[in-house]
Image (tube, rainbow, N blue to C red; front, side):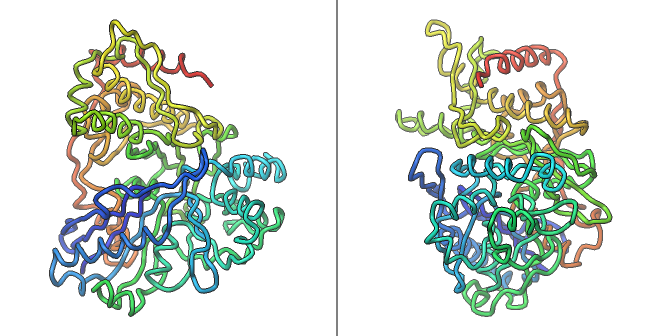
Length: 494
């Protein structure tokens, strides 16, 4: 059997095929080749057309099937990973009514704060483990208050992955983990938070049918199967937000295990078996993909919006100046500057409201710039150290909640391809990082195989997950990194 994995990002859609028998990836593609556009009609807004994700999904699947003749008819199960916290609203015909308000959009922060005040801090922390914040429910409430003509036509609300699932199967569905990431799940009742909807004047019937994260959630429609060239008996069996899925991809499933990623945003994600929350809401608590009422697992998530986005911003400056420099070459430039960038400090914010700082719209900053000492290498290193230190701060916050990191797992991708970034993160946290050969689309395919019953155990599902290397803290430079990290925190103006 072959399993199909989809990773619906805000930059692109990635598609992978996994051979069930060998556990190896048969191939992977990305659509489009250039990054998706994010529309920003106003400062702090971020929107995308859900149909754009679907068109890229169709193109990616067709491309991958063409590269692997005969594979399409052997696909038995499909898994979906997707950008978290976005809102998709559709009418009774399943037509999109409004551009998706995606994860880095900040417009609903005040709406969420008002909802938090109305529901009460104690109630929210006990039942939701989060404030409505700037998450999916707050975005829905914002639509109700600011786009009543759109809101009146809504039949169902969905997260981005739910929309792709609907296009595949023809059915509007969601998952417990997805509802929790939208702050629409009651941890005490182990059910959708209909009480939140009722108390804040939103019809809970807008929530689609709830399907398990692991388990059959629908069959591909015959029309879509014919269009894509895949087995019409293929079933959707796995769905998760990108960060829970990244953790799953890295075999992070039990309490005390940590995962991280540094793509467009930077995330540190830890699993615990306790319903714990951060009363300051710097860290968010969501159901993990393998959560069961009798064996709870909760993911603690620290997010930095401007991680890889800060690095790509710097690269674009090189490109605009006529140098089509690679990220690897940028790392080489950064390595010419000493640890700590001789006092130059970069705070990598400016890509939407930062959750770790109360959803404030912080700006990216370069401080301590000495025109007689600092050059391009210092700025390049400062950017990578700044992202690493922001992620180290997230790790520190999770540790302070009582969940200690002994080792952190990451895919060898994005900023973890850079030795400069990796060393800064490992030494700032004082924690080894294991690097693996995997990605979100492959993880979603592996999840589909396990959830379909083809793999019967965790050990079997991850038997082919390849550990590439381990980066250990360097005793000779650790103190320099710790000093640079302390200076970075001291210069953080909030």
